[in-house]
Length: 152
Image 1 (cartoon, helix red, strand yellow):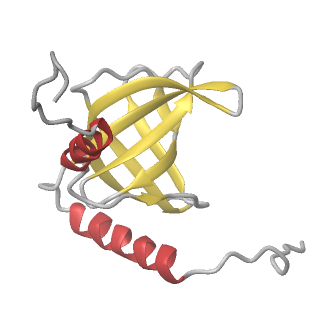
Image 2: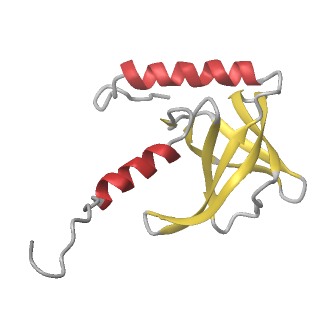
């Protein structure tokens, strides 16, 4: 061996990075959520606010609002999320904000929130089955790019 070189082991940083990422994976797989559902939250200071759910799992969800929105939430805050399945009927679930950050989406600033679902609520069973349903839709569904037309 050349002078000054010892027998130390070389560690691949990419494999260490992959291990760390795997450790940080969520407990549940998240499903990208694009729908025509009305999803809102109610906040005492700003009233009923439309939100865009980006992904959802059995344990949590991520949503965004325009950065200029009146809705401003802090990490640790608990808020109700309403999933409207008809014009005047909804299922509500409380969520706890665990992440909050500003992001750019198509050149526009948005505020994103990562939240945990309150599994102790009676409505959690409905949300759980809803997530199961959209997971199966994501696995087996097809995108119609030609035939979907609405006539009035």
